[in-house]
Length: 236
Image 1 (cartoon, rainbow, N blue to C red):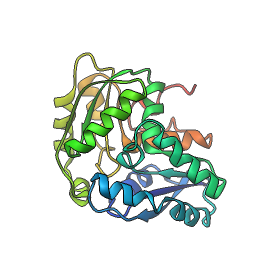
Image 2: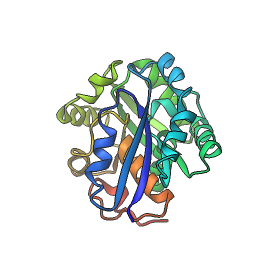
Image 3: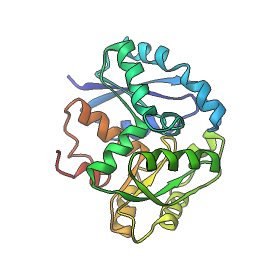
Image 4: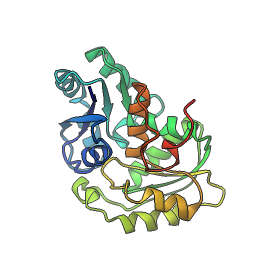
C-alpha cells in the first residue's frame, strides 16, 4: 500500500501540495491540512503556530505515516531549535514521525556537505534576517541572501519560474557550495535541474528538501525522483 505523507501548510499556500503530488504516482499519497496565514510576516507566523497541534491531530485521523510542517519561515523565526520544538509538539500530540521544513533544509545541506551557501527568497528583509540568523546558528555561512520583498503569500505562489531562476543566479557566489531557494509556496521543481546545470552546484528548495527528508524519515526510496542532486546522492 502506498505510504501517506501528511503536510501542514499555510492556508494561502498554493504550491506545496502540487509539487509533492507531481512526483507521487502510485508511490505515496499526499494529505494536507491548513493553518491560517495570508502574509509572511512575523506576526502572522506567530499566530499560525498556534494551530499546529490541532492540524497534526487532523492528519493523524487519516492514518498518515509521517507529518511535515511545511513552512520554512514558520519553522525558523524563533531561532536555533525552533524546528526541533515543532517536531516535538507534533510527535507528542500524534505519536507519529515528523519533520519541519527549516530542519529539512539543514539536514539536506549537511547531507550535501555544503557549509557555504547562497540563499534566494521571496521574503521581506525582516524574514530574511531571521533566516540568516537561523542558518548561521546551525553552522552555515550565508555568503549572500536576497528576497523579492513579497509579504502576500498568494503573490509568492504566483511567482514565475524565470524570475526565481534570475534571483538564484543573482545570489550565486563562486564560493557557495550550494544554493538554497526558500519558501514552500515558491514554485521550484520545474527549475531545479536547469539551475544545477547552469550553476554547476547543488540547488535545493524548501519543497525538495522537505520531500527528501519526509521520504527519508520513513525509509522510503527517493532515488527515482528527478529534481536535483539531493535525490541522487547516495543515502548515508
